[in-house]
Length: 130
Image (tube, rainbow, N blue to C red):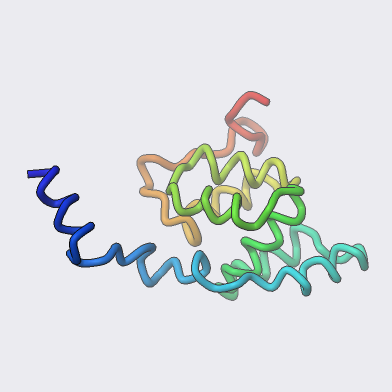
């Protein structure tokens, strides 16, 4: 059955719809130029990322996390597309964001199921070893 479905997709079956509509930020070109200008001006920080997240500007948050972490935006998009709590939390850590914000990003942006989310450790620390 699996082989048949794979063959059907390859032979004109329904194309993959990609990420769900609630994850449009994975399809839209993130505002890298704006984020880099803020970084160069010394204004790209957790406060700006939090405001963008609360305003549901997920493409800005994605671009901001990628730039702060020093990784390509495509790599950050892949982290979110994987729906991995460890991946999202690791990206937030690499970007220098607090675990409190990483927790909110898991909820609001990455849509990680509650039972799979990583919670802050004692004192709001990251629950993963470096």
